[in-house]
Image (cartoon, rainbow, N blue to C red; front, side):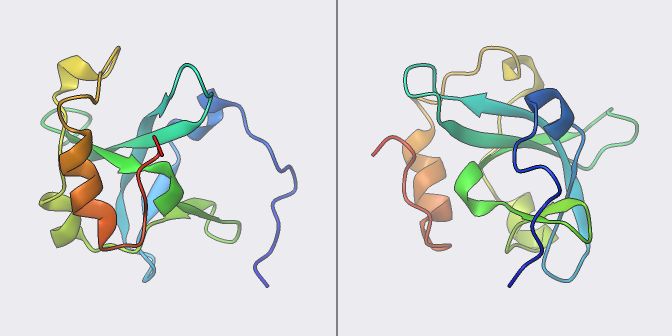
Length: 123
């Protein structure tokens, strides 16, 4: 059984900046932000920043929150992807980080991650 975190809840501002790794421990990026569905309060996506140097040229990928698993030993979220899979994942523009609306892209995002066994957050 996986170790439980010392505290089961975390404020959103402490999630931002947390590393995201793959099962091999390879760093894929960090959580730039989280997208929360306003009505239900459900976390829909982690917005993962990937690549770039000092934030310049980074790409932003909305990753379904249900895909992330927190690893207490690595102090990071683990996703079952490698860098190549992340590079081809749906992206959003940096300008969309504050106030992004997924209505036009949610089906593409769901189709991409369906192979990982993750259902849409809106169902």
